[in-house]
Image (cartoon, rainbow, N blue to C red; front, side, top):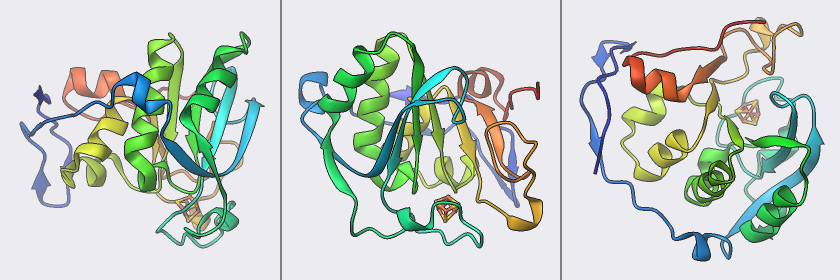
Length: 199
Ligand code: SF4
């Protein structure tokens, strides 16, 4: 049983407070055999987070952001299946990597498998950065164990839809200014959303 700290961020008129959730882990020996449906992989990305990132582009997204830069990843058909173990082996075998980035599409459409992958990567001592078109508050308040697990298995959550009118090419690791680089650990420690400082 995991007890979250009070999150005092307002979401409309709703206050997030003292929510409890049971998070069931997939044993690591099993997680490696699970499959993800992906649109592609960038094995040494320098644009999806700090350092060299192993970026997995998950296939499928329910949102239809006008101006989406990865529209080919929106359909839930297509893409290819890959075992989590294959991704983990590739990450283990590249000492240059700083971590894993889950992008898409939206990783929360395959949250359970993404969470298992992310937990294994964190266990290697590497960081996990997860992109999503949903806000942190919307994901957490949905009260879905798989979504909460993926949040908890991420060091940084880049949240919110891409909004074309707010597009700014000078932003670090994100496309529009509504999107936030949320420090997940600090957010739970502080009980409010903590975003990484601009550099
Ligand atoms: S959330 Fe991302 S992948 Fe999904 S439609 Fe919006 S920009 Fe495209």
